[in-house]
Image (cartoon, rainbow over all chains, first blue to last red):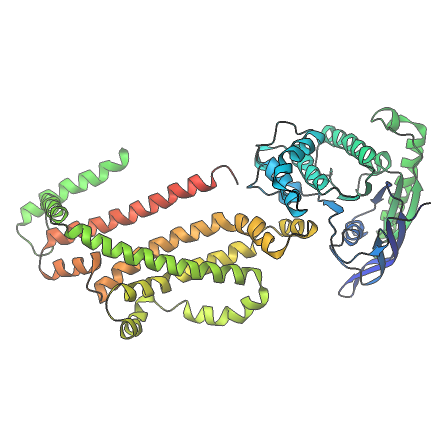
Length: 257
Length: 242
């Protein structure tokens, strides 16, 4: 394995005397898609927030591209689950993408062309002048992804990005995300509670156990790419992985009771 | 149009009632009020009084709104400062603005400055309280987006906090504008010998109910027009963006 781009070493995080992450260690290779799954309270979102530099671990070391994570970085973009709250309602689609370009100091002249290209890339061509309030949930999440891509990120931290969408939209966005990952080579840490989604997207899936959050299972997903919503999900290898992950989650939830 | 039926009916009733009652020091028939209004328009006294009142009201509104806005933004963003200033704000805020008149009169004397100062005092509070709440109520996720994008504090205020809280701040401004007119007229009635309030006082004491009522109705019209203008501006500024 080449040098890890994201490296967690015995990362612990406590809020008061409640331990949320109890010693998390894993590493991601550049360009890898790693999915974190687990029951609620397992700390998967917290782990992502540590990786994004939004919270600092209580102890242990989290590093990105060889340097300890001290705070948010412009080359690490965060896709939040609640897209409706993460977009600026008073700015159009164009303006929302522009926010990230303004943040990275992109010259004003270059913005329109880059915005158009980014909107096109996430399937929002011609929607530049719509406000988020005039868009469906799926379109809003596409817009948030476009804004994140505008940062030119080396890594995307995606926190249950498709959890609130209907099944058809979710599958569209999954495939679009895989296409973006393929063409940009971005590293993706993807948090989800949907086991099938984790297997479908991931090169690797880590299942977390709750109270405190720690690694319970790690599965390598050796399914061929490009993946296909029907063929991949029907393959025996997919079903076997799904069974393995399901048994793990079921076991964890059974013990909790 | 239906909204005009009742006022028209009442005006006719007042006309009949006042004429049956005969000459009075308190009430005048609407027809005479209209005549008195026309006379006040022609001799310029209405325009002059309106100008004086509006200068004081807008001047005080501008000063009070700017102070209230600045304090509100700071207190909304900083929990520490909010705690430090909570007691002074809560002690000063309940003071009726007219109660400030004696102090302000000694310090500033009669005239615009007195009135502007008291109107400003009254306008600071609604602006401060609403702005503080609007700023503190900005969607936390948006502030996190700002962090994730590493926006500077300055850019965060101008690109996120200000636009997010502006619609609610504008509502506060509209309330403050209403307060400004009320307080300006009150100060004129109480001490300041200028503007619409002073005219009302003068005509009341001169036993001219026709002019008194004409000016009274006019104060209502000015207040109504002010609020309508601001409502229109609000609809234009924030249309379709929420």
